[in-house]
Image (cartoon, rainbow, N blue to C red; front, side, top):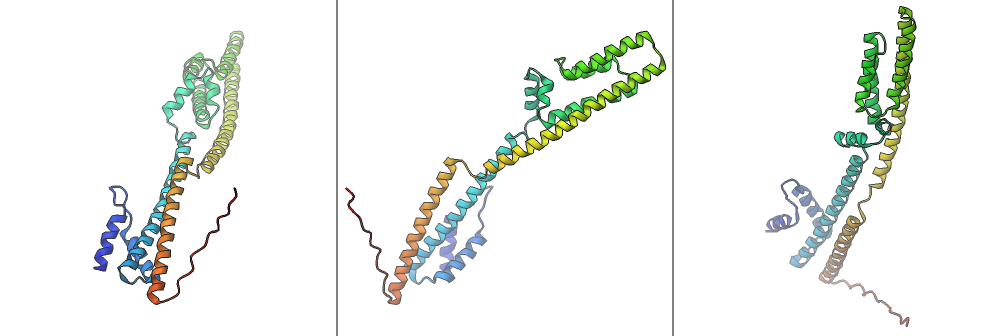
Amino acid sequence: MNALKHGILSKEVLVEALHYRESSGEWEALRHRFWEDLQPVGALEEMLVDQIMTAHWRLRRALVAESGEITLSVDKGYWKGGQGTDVMMVWACWWAAPDMEEAMQRNWQGNSILLGWLEDTRRAVEREGLLTAVIVGELARHFSDKPSSLVVEFENLLGRQGLEAGETGSTALRKTQKSEALALVDERMETIRDRRERCMDHEDSNEDGRQAAAVLPSAEVLDKILRYETKLERQMDRAMAQLERRQRMRRGEALPAPLSVEISDRS
């Protein structure tokens, strides 16, 4: 009957939802420890031990809930921080910016994409043997033909090299112009790599700060959990006091004197 009674109690206390189930094994192990420690005799003492054990179990559940809220808060901060930002939303922000190139330079994703475009430009120059209007036009199309200081640099170089080629179209000049174009690409790529590293360090630092700030649940959730814990602690303390009093009476021991509270008239 004792086993049957506690089996019924566990069904009333344990959460057994579809996607979350509390462990009946842990519950039984906890019941065994409480029973061994408190040694209840009779139905009344057993009821008080059940109350103590149930309050303790629910306090553990409150800690789990608090940990879950913190996890959700940290993960939410991670996704809001940009590490898991939707790619299409990022692109929309870049395209909507007055200066698309400048907007892309603000984070490591944008700088990575700029590096990819310049790598394409470099391969095209290597393939064609010089910088051409088609190559510069392809780079400009990446920016949806919006103003770009990067594109302007290559347009200026292309214009200057065109004037030089009109004067002398020697093979030596062609090689020189190719080297100039590749040097400009490499220089800009190095600048963007450095900027990407700084962005990554900055974003990692911001993410660490967000996660540190998210280690506490929101004030509303925290207040709810604390009020729940306070209620359970009072229930446990009251049951412990009643159990101690009952056991002292059963053993014929003197009962502790009730605490006296002095109320002073401050009026």
